[in-house]
Length: 190
Image 1 (cartoon, rainbow, N blue to C red):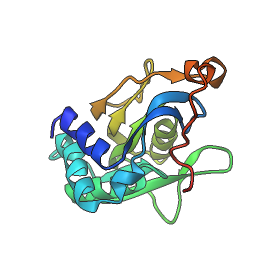
Image 2: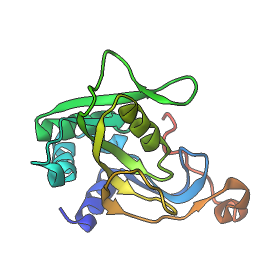
Image 3: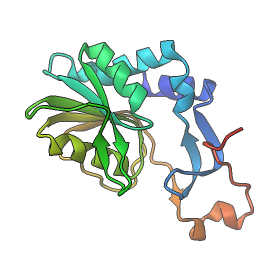
Image 4: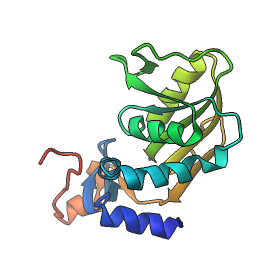
């Protein structure tokens, strides 16, 4: 599916939230991609995950790993498409990410690390640190959406299905706040 086709699908499924939105980082933007809404549709997610991992087919990937929460189901579907293990990291009290629940990687395991959306790359970096701490070889990093602002390096090839450089504002300097546009909290309970 083309980039435009993916964005259209995400808009129809309510994944794309537009307006004045609060990002997970605490910053503000004009749009947010709430991928949990994609995850509730296994048939759609299966196709998107297959497309995400397709470039790594035949590259010797032995595991697909993602950070909780956004990367858990995506890692599972990507691993299923490649016929390999699925793992995820969880946040530790000190902010690091770690493999728990008996998950482990032997030294040299070839890992693909996936995430739903990348803005600052913080969750992905902590997930990569957890993989590398066990001696894994990170083959690539992949995301459904790359909305990075500025250069973010992962020490492995990075690719995304959709790239959207959306504006990100510090709340103190947000032009939407200054205009009095109501703030939407996409992840808030309803």
